[in-house]
Image 1 (spheres, rainbow, N blue to C red):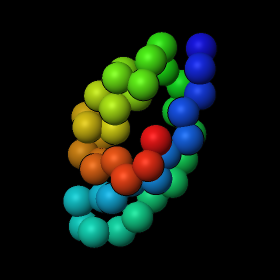
Image 2 (cartoon, one colour; image 1 turned 90 degrees about the vertical axis):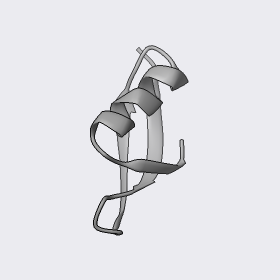
Image 3 (cartoon, rainbow, N blue to C red; image 1 turned 90 degrees about the horizontal axis):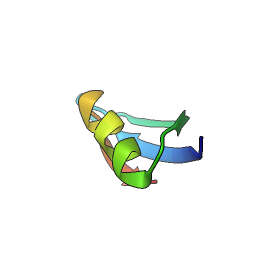
Length: 42
């Protein structure tokens, strides 16, 4: 499964970075949304 590196804005305004596995970029964006993260870079 592909890995996606992201940088996102958390609800409190802090930035977070990480790597997640998803079948597609769309699925990765959905996962970040469910975590209440606003993606800045994927």
